[in-house]
Length: 127
View 1 (cartoon, rainbow, N blue to C red):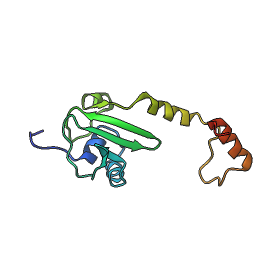
View 2 (cartoon, one colour; view 1 turned 120 degrees about the horizontal axis):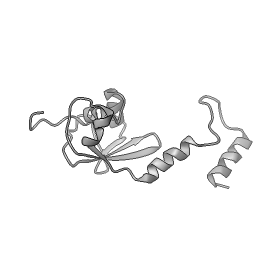
View 3 (cartoon, rainbow, N blue to C red; view 1 turned 45 degrees about the vertical axis):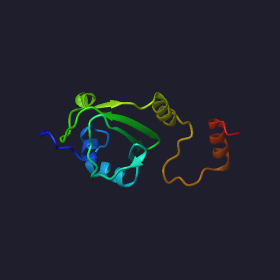
View 4 (cartoon, rainbow, N blue to C red; view 1 turned 135 degrees about the vertical axis):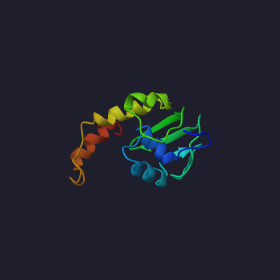
């Protein structure tokens, strides 16, 4: 890559495999789910080395530091050369907790019954 060329943030997030497609990365930027210095960024924002980026993906807030710039997608084994994961362990624990929920409901199943709601509240400790 030539010096002076900085990739767009949506392209960089796609290239380091944070998002499956570039259009998903663009949509996340437009929705305000990608932040730098706690400020939402546009998809056209240029990425620089040592920049810390926060990404809200579902229930998890991921934080990464840019180590190297790149324009093309890389293999999963090479991703660690381009970013440093600064995400706290609590975020990964939160994700595991959600995966283990005993009260998972099918999408479109409607509102929970009174008993299901009580069970959810008890499980979460919201008695």
